[in-house]
Image (cartoon, rainbow, N blue to C red; front, side, top):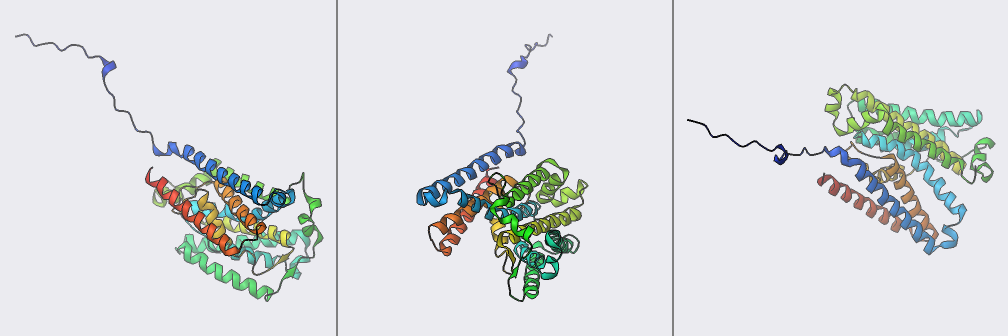
Length: 339
């Protein structure tokens, strides 16, 4: 008996299930949207400042002041961004800036001139970062506790060094950096340092294995360990990097203020964390951008400047900052739930 023969199949009509693209392919697009949103917020703030105080806000001297003030906390924020991307936190950055600034402006240190002040500020910052890194990476301490202890210790040591007094800088080469004669094409030297730190931070995070390891450790430490990454050593390096940024920021603050005080860097940790958060860095780790963090710093600094020019009270300013932080976290949660 002859079996029926099936008609030939037309392969063009077969439906082949399409593979779903991996989630990471959408990250650049989301990052671009987030960056454009932050630029929109910054543009809106500039517009508000220009409308409320056109003669004062848009003056070149005021714009230079905004960028100069953003430079100090901006350098700290670059280091903080790396730490948060790795899944950590650093509550001691403000205290480290204070300690580095007062240690670098003692009479004994100033005898060594410009190099002595710069070297001392950087080495104190790196030393504090080393202590944080060892306690967290090899002492298995929770970053919140370890850096909180450093916050208290560094503030206490800064107070002990100064005895509550302001230490005036008498080195002309340091003070000259804050003068208008030192500006290059209208750009203050502090802003140029901030720009260099930002570019280096971006390159390290996006173009080096160190940056990829940082993201991997923050995304999944166990998977990073199984992939051959020394997680403890990476965390140590990250807190060293944060300390280095604090040391550089301390030197910039010395140039800006012309002195060292134990109250320097007050609430820098909150400002740096807030700037990183609204810039798109996840507190849980695994994602973040240097560009977003820098835009966050500029947004907060612009808000502060607008409030000051309009003689608004600082408590209203803090409420506005708090509202921005809450909104940024809610946006992050919504974005995470849709991916």
